[in-house]
Image (cartoon, rainbow, N blue to C red; front, side, top):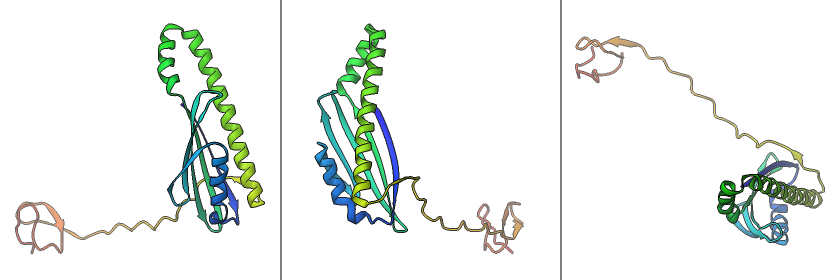
Amino acid sequence: MFEKRDYRMYEGVKREDIYQQICDFWTRQGFYVAQISPFHIQGQSYHQKIGLRREFFLRMDEHQNNTYIDLQLQAITDEGVIGGAAAAIIFWPVAVVGGALSYSEYENDANALMGSFWVFVDQITNKRGTFAHAPQPPQPPQPQPQFYETVTCQGCGAIIIKNWKACPYCARPNE
């Protein structure tokens, strides 16, 4: 299996404005497109030329008036998994060369597809996407540890919190 991922940010672009055009792009590329959740789509196609099933996963997030697009491409060959195992046992040198050629073709196909996608998004937004990392949601402040005053239970000697009514170990009332 081959996998490639890219993540770009489009400054000042609303995801609602480009979402439908992006879905149309993938449909025109021969992918069956399905919406997983709002602004999260996936698609599949079978590429006859190089004999593989291609999949993409695309998620669009919006943060501070910027749209972040996360694109992942995968190339999967069902025949390659079964045939590759048999060929590896019988024809190891041929399998290695065949695998290298397939991987190279998958990578070339993925690079071309991703490149045309990013050019398309640049055109419809009239902006150039910048490589980015996913925005991190703000983290709530960590609660400060609370220190309790402790005492020793007169019944069993366990250390317990001073304001407890009874010892949790021996049930003796705390005095």
